[in-house]
Amino acid sequence: MKRASIILISLLLSSCIPYKIAPRFKNEDYKVMKAKKFQRKLAKETSFIFKDPKDADEFYNYINTKYSLNHNDVGLNSPIQINDKTYFFTYHEVERTDQTANVGLVVTDLVLDEKLGVTAFEKNYSSRKGHWYIVITVYDENLKNCLLDKHPNKTEVLQYLKDMQQEYLKTHNYEELLFTKKS
Image (cartoon, rainbow, N blue to C red):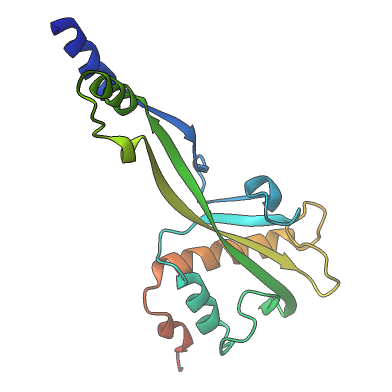
């Protein structure tokens, strides 16, 4: 009985096996990649992707306020200006999850069911934690993806997106974005 208890405790302490892991961007705040590789539901367009630690619809509110869109087509081909050129901005909020199987709890329930006819951990066999990401695609006036390596304005568009990401993450009151400095 002692040996079985030790084995059971060992299993419980080391029993979470991950079978689905959300992406981690190593040493980067963002990633430029095909959106379809990131999430199957998305288009095969090269996109700017970053993790969104804020609440749901925060990015929507940020874009709506920053570009004064009045809730019209927010994030769906919204026009933006970069160096006096017009581009069109589309974004999606995407959830990716970490999921683990708790093998120790399954084994414990099997033993309990066999010995006592009771299961105690049936609802805890797996665990899930969601992570949200913003996937942004930018097109020029000719509807060419600006994040492709061959696009002549990729560098300036990418810098604009990095700056926008930092502004979004640092800003809590989006109404502040509407105030301009008077000289």
